[in-house]
Image (cartoon, rainbow, N blue to C red; front, side, top):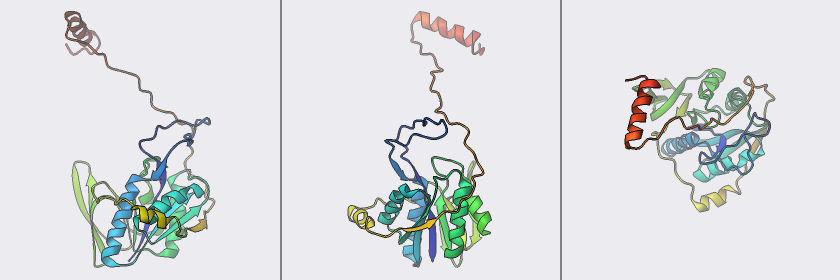
Length: 248
């Protein structure tokens, strides 16, 4: 079984994000970048299936040379091979999906895994675009997966519950929290990963379908009023509930 895992490089969720001087991108100076947390679930699921059924796990990403760090992390976790589709910093999901689809057509994987979304773009579009480009089934937001006899049985989260669906291979699976617990790379594996080769492919020059016009950090203005239990504050509370909230 050959499995392709799509991963992306995103700012650490604990980082403080600052908008760049152009007003259209983030200031990356001083930021720590990591493998997209949802993509770690995809790597782990691929590794577990490969161990059970045999085959090869390949991790792939699209972007600049800086993306080699997340590929090294994937190698340290245990994937067999990594591929960098080297080009400009991705502008939208379409640019990424088009390039990955082109590689997938030559690799012919049985399964394509990716996280349900990246925590930077948050578009949730990759599984659908890839499925359309490759003309194969796609099951999104999967929190439980069984692969057997050339098909997948997947439980996916929906509003208010879960649904179980079945699809034939090859298939695309986007991974949701709860599917597994990603492993932490061990130090010896991290050191070995630094010496392993990274295959590089030139990215197709695809015009993004989405243009970022502006970017801004949400304001954090205090909207509440803090009152004590003093007589004056109690009177003020009653007044506010009557005159502003208009609930008494």
